[in-house]
Image (cartoon, rainbow over all chains, first blue to last red):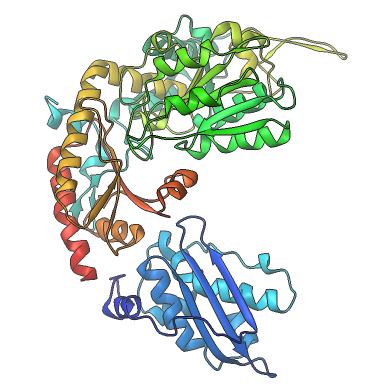
Length: 137
Length: 412
């Protein structure tokens, strides 16, 4: 793990995000805001009959950490099954980012994943509040 | 300010290093640091004088009671209140406004009106908004001018004979701009209602720590502030209220310490201010607050305010030289600006600015500073806020300005 929160890979994803936009024929759509900082992320995705993600995009605005994190996650989540995605946790996200995140910024790193996981719960008609939008250390 | 080096030596935390760099603490509007005089007063109280107050007929009980009441007297003199019985200790400003909103609103009639400003901290916004909904009152919001102060004409136009209370901030916690409370008090008090005149509540959380505040000269009906923003401990705040108004108000919390006589059928209330302080209060907090007030009085509030103004002028001048920086409310009346400056850097999110500054040992706040309606109105979700206090130096502001280049370098 690198101590520099603003490593090159983070800044690359922030400046040139992957999978930015909207899946037109989406099955899952969720747009939410982190009330603490105003960062807003929308994730749209298309899934097949086996519930594998076949297309995923994000939109929104916010800090480098939240935007880079969801950009990297969209690469990672492509092709994964929604049940697998529901199991992804903080440790997995931090490993993906490869940096040590200051405790106050954990919620930034986690926002995109949580928005998508809540979107999956909404799509399945389940209680999406079961997942908190603001992760803490 | 003279002897700033000596003054800084009173604050143990200022010698801390963050990431190996000297701490530059520019987040005093959120909470101030504490001088050893305050830390020692609390420690000495617990080590030598502590017992419960107003109860035991023993030496420690008497000493603790005297220390607690002394803290009220010190606070009353500091605010030039007519009596220490007008001083109620609360947990903080937020608790004071919750008490005020509930206690006043429950006595109003359906359709009566309350007014707050768009620049309020959530502590002076949400309690009124929620009580207005609960008691079916009309919740009105007064506009802010380009100078970051209450639009007096708009305020005048909002007042009707059903307006029972106006609750506004003295100094904006986002802009550092100062409202002319005595003029607003005249406008508000001139407005007649069915049973008197409209009341004025003032949020003093940013003003009482930084400038001379005289409640009689301001002629506000209520004033609330927090100890922790003025060198004192957390968990102690103050609600000042005019005695004749407090006497008419009903307590919200019931229990020990606030009663007169209790029978199986009924209870009478104790005298002011005890009737509003149910249960054992934060005695050590009161002792710490009194020590903080004495520390500030020792410097002199005029000097504290002058220092603040000088720093505000300096920080604004330096920030205005930065081409990619947008300052929110850059204009100010000379000699009338608290050193609170909110800004954004083009294309860099406030949280990222704050994170990178932290790596340089610099503490600033990033976010909406508990003023979401205000941030909505200026159209930015988050700003970076620099805020100074008695221990802040111009050199620290230089360090901060210099560090902005490091922020840019990361994002170039």
